[in-house]
Picture (cartoon, rainbow, N blue to C red):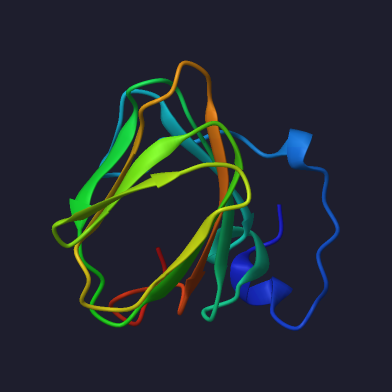
Length: 130
């Protein structure tokens, strides 16, 4: 496999089926994601683009980003997104922009999988890689 630094400046064409599902830190109960375009497979420090699938009752715990901005776009299922103290029911084609400094969490409250896209920029909240 090519190292991320060797990949900088090169395009990436990949099949999602080739990428492993991963449960990232702070994710629980079958909250899985695939890194589609992220530091580990592109070398980019500017973007982390994932597809996520949360099993029923799975979640990402409440957290805050220092400098990162995120967009979540729901493809399938439903879940409750909490932004600071406000709860929002999210369903297909709903999306949210989360600026830095906003406490947020996302839980699958439905009966089937919650599938959504996550775009995060920059790729690291500390200045390195995720």
